[in-house]
Each structure stands twice: as structure tokens, then as C-alpha cells.
Length: 120
Image 1 (cartoon, rainbow, N blue to C red):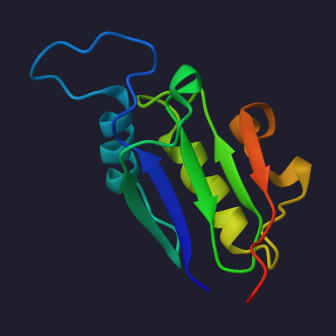
Image 2 (cartoon, one colour):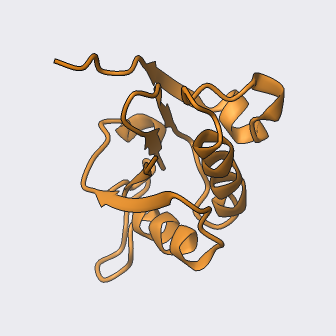
């Protein structure tokens, strides 16, 4: 089943961004693309996850699974842990990764957990 890692590319993480510089969210997106993408995971840039005061932010989702939103992520250091968390999520049939098996940033920086959508 396809898992999507949504990355807010417009996130400024509460910082001013000099003209011509990439915002922190875009830098996080680039760092994730440069890493080892887990099998079955697609990275999708999004313009806003409405977590502006909690940026940088990502969300993990898949059909029939719980969706998770994570924030307060560092574009320079957190990409490997985010990709490890995405791999664990991809391996969980319902999207619920046991707490102890989650990367530390996913244990401490979860902003929301959204139930799966019901089929019509």
C-alpha cells in the first residue's frame, strides 16, 4: 500500500527567510529527497499543513490508516529519523507504530493523529 510523506515546503519555522533563500520547509523537503526513501513511501510537497507555529512539519498518511502530523522538525538533522519513521509507518498495517518503535522525534513531536477515513 502506498504511503505518502507530506512535507510543508512553505514552512518558515517562525524565522524570517532572506530573499532568495529557501525556507526551512523546502530545505527539509530537499534533505528527505537526498536520503534513502523507504520502499512504498512517496514524498509529496505541500504548500501548508497549518502548523505554522510548530514548523517544520510533515504528515504521514495512507488509505485506511491513521494519519500523523509531526512538527518542530529540524531540516538539517532530522531527515534520517523522519525516513526511519516513515519506514515503520509503512510496515504498520493500520498506521499505528508501537510507541517504543517510533523514532524519538515522532514520540515527542506529534501534533495530531487523525483516524482513517471511512469508505463511502
